[in-house]
Length: 233
Image (spheres, one colour):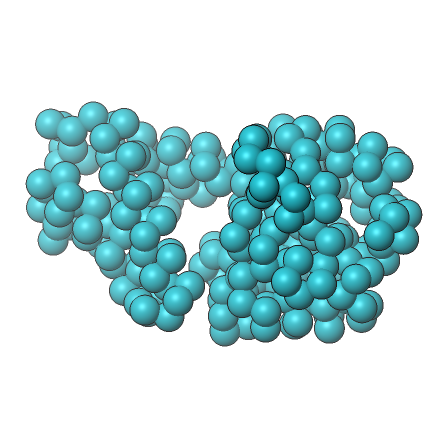
């Protein structure tokens, strides 16, 4: 579809508009400094192991193989176990991490300007995975409730992206046809594959150089200036 023909634009939140990866790493570094528990472990080790464990747990959660509560427990309990530390302290560590993580939320470079310029020309919504209470706090802190016409958190729908029911629900809220929507997101599986399978066009925000994956998206960019150019803004 021609960029000028879109009737609604959805944005992913984490690592598309907001820099989740940097906030996660900074929060874990703060946790590393906070607890003597980690004195024999480097911050880099903690970040690497947590990222691997957390990614596995979110994958299981998206397949309904673990519950939300199990995910919240497992990501820190298993991280501590893999590091050879006292896993009984998972709750204390996890709670402190969430407090630090929130301190480091910020826009991706160029995303704020692009978002508000696009907002002047198109109706805009947010469609995100993640824990509902955390994502709602981000919506509040970054004034996304006020600026976006719709906000969709997949957990509140009952399934996670890339499940088609998430995209169906978001399409119904936008009150347009699927092929009238452009989705801007960073995840190949959740955003590109999930969106295109439901009939949305997808602008993939990535530095991934795999041509076969690029073919799945309708537009690929690594700088929000390019997205603005694509949308003739």
